Length: 212
Image (spheres, rainbow, N blue to C red):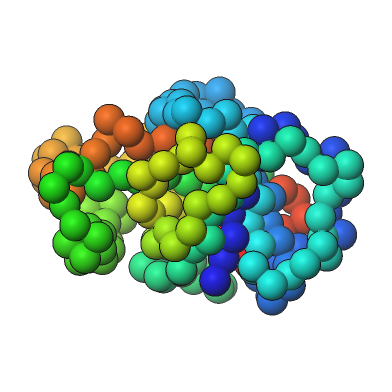
């Protein structure tokens, strides 16, 4: 189980623990490139300045102090679409990596089981139509909590897409208009009018594709 917490202010202290091992955390902050942040500017009902990813059993280890103001949190079950090739990660400019995090709602009339079936099918579709997509993870929402949980009501999944470079994200998201059109023709199970997207990059104390 993974916990994702929305932070309404930026953490002020460098993390004491980070990486992809258990008991660690990853902090995402807004991408430094204005054009990257603007590409999928989907503001939502809860403000997002940063995102904090942890295992639910990590306790206080690695928590920034003083604590930033917090929005809703989500307990998630991870499903790996695919991971970045390990041999490429070490040689990648972490500052150039783009991490797109989207909070998703189901379309009206789509059940939870129907949503997840379509959602899993998206992996093969993304593999075929988004060759610049470097790493892809899906998270099913189990619980939404926190004082601002009501603002996130209806979020059923969180998608995380990594692009190896800013240029890939800005100019090679889809290689052709036909690919983009075909991909979007399979998104009827999503209510994209309610989708909320955060485009950022992981804090330097984490690797560019780390997850808790």
